[in-house]
Image (cartoon, rainbow, N blue to C red; front, side):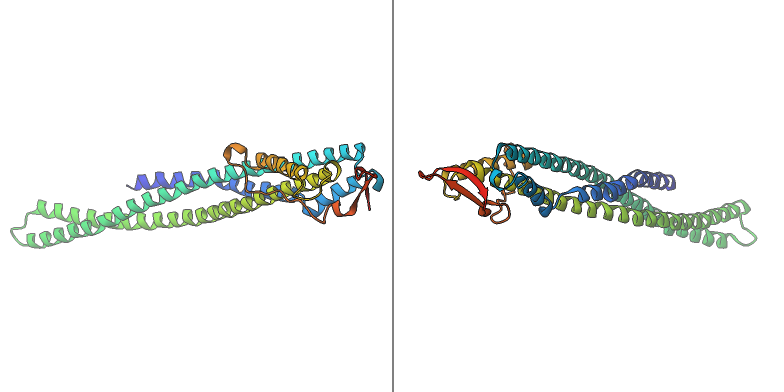
Length: 290
């Protein structure tokens, strides 16, 4: 039994030695690195605003500016998608490490069962020792069988020694198990916390992607769609198309899409500050920042 416990303890320590550094790397390095690189709403807005206004108010919808906005949009989306891929990979690694950690629980349960079995032997051995002591007492006197007495005494000594051995082993094993449990709890806590942070970062990244899509869509709608109301068919068609692209990016149409709705900024990216210059037939001939 003792050998079985030693083997199980070694297995637990081996798992901890493998998992602990990997958990710390993912939690302390990878997550912080990704978190620091996620662009903020203000930074995304500023980047796109700088490009939109770079050629002056009269050229806000010029070919040059449109090409620059396309370039910036693709660059931002590509960068955020890489972060999305890294955070998904980190999440997958941590979940796998968490599953390995949970194996230790099963091992601890097995060790505890063996320890309890050892403890159950103690009263049996004590009973044997007491019975042998009674027998030895009854054998005392002139008619005592010397060989039988020696055997009984040897049995008493063996039983008492075994009880001491088991008690000492139990104390040692219980101490080692407590250390494993303490280390296990710390690493599992770090893993669980890191997974929670990753889920939050996933939501943040999805929101940033929706924001970039929204800013880009708003600019595109200003320059390409004459209608500027949600009731306008051309406007709504552009919004629907952008939402479909966003769903593919975040969830995939085969998996039912995503829950992320595209955010179309109302007062934060130019449409209310862009003037549509129309001719006598009310056809838009030019855009400019008012």
